Length: 620
Ligand code: PEP
Ligand code: MG
Image 1: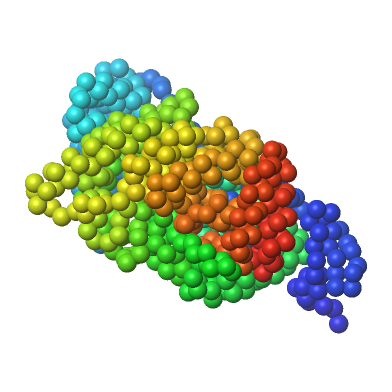
Image 2: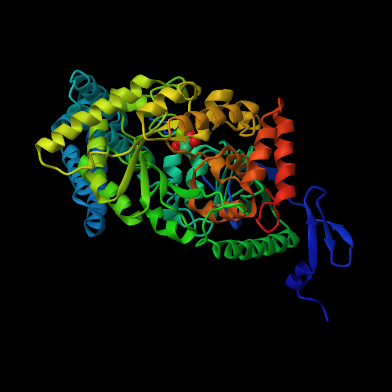
């Protein structure tokens, strides 16, 4: 009797992907059916198998042409129909929001409706069509440029915000006129597909949960880019930096995405599919085992105690924190509240969110980071101008100290929320003491304002600084005297100290967490914090990677914060190691001059000290 095909696949026990050969249980080898293996950057763990959906994103070309006199009326009608259609869309969204969301979003939609009827926008565009005989898109563009020049003369942020609304609405009308509808490019995404895109911004990635995809792969990006960070937060397997993948695969074709090894397999054969199915099963089993330990303390064999906390980007993540054994929130990236929307959230909206965050983890602490906008996290609000070198530009604390109204609203919301739990506030991308001093002064001013209005706040709200720039390390002693805690943001510290762009896959091979420079900078920071008797932790991606835990443990950090999903494995590792040995490994690691030697030493030591298979790290 002929064996069923699936039975045949499962009798193969081993696959050698490098040689593209399969070995069955009797030791016989044969080549794997022709498939294409592409190596990318392992961005978020997990295996996904399914059909590709290739995202086409071409920039909108705005046409400009003349309209014959006898067609002017129908051109005006085309413009008015677009306005009606967009208004209908907003009304539909508003109806939906009324059921779930707060007043703030509904007010925004109402203000959009008013703009769509605004004389300045509508009548001016019609006048341009009539008098200059031009098409609606061109006429609208002229109107928008004129409004912009009028509004740019106003200093008040109120007018600048109205300007951003008008830009947004104008863009929507133009899109509708050009492509006939305003559908999102991803709205046709079939359920359970694997998204293939040239690039995805962190903002777009944070919206992916809406489409119920299995994973995604892009052509650009680095391991510590925010796109990668968000995919881990959403438990979405992802591979980034996979060259030319959008040209190599078509919609509907099958692919396997291995987010742990950073491999994408196009047109896999049945053997490969079976192999990955069994890997998926093994991974689920290993996860179950690790989850059984989450209630145990995070301490080494020789009883050195550490605290493992979670990094979050989206409020929805909070529910899963306890399940993974998080001892609080070590980093809430608040900038994600500002992305994917036309207007910044108000103080009240932020207050409600921060309150919810601190209350839901209480009595555990919640560290909320002030707005770290800029670089790869650009909100849609128009006032964030594009910069020639965004990573070194008006990012994070620099932006906040310039946009004081916006920053004060966030600080006020944080102070108000501080009485509802154990809130700590953390400042990103500090590079000088004066930045810390300016924030402290602002906080004092706001405290006085709140006291005058008899609004409660925690007068001793802990304030911490992220050590992410070489300058912050060099000034760490002085900074440590001014604040209550330090947290090393290794993602940026590596980027800025090695001068390697963290989101550029072209230099990803130079982005080395285990670099002698990085080790020395971390050691200096730990020493500064210890001298000032304040706690110091790590909240960059290094804290979640099993290969670096040995070194971080040896450095003596009291707290590590990471994506929640990584906590069980990191806990498993720490419980399998001894602090004494980790310290010895770290001391020896400091003697290496070449990063390659340092890296292989650390890997060798880890393999000697822990069971890499049990901890699911043999494939990384
Ligand atoms: C970091 O830089 O390590 C960090 C935690 O901040 P972000 O990744 O948001 O820049
Ligand atoms: Mg950072």
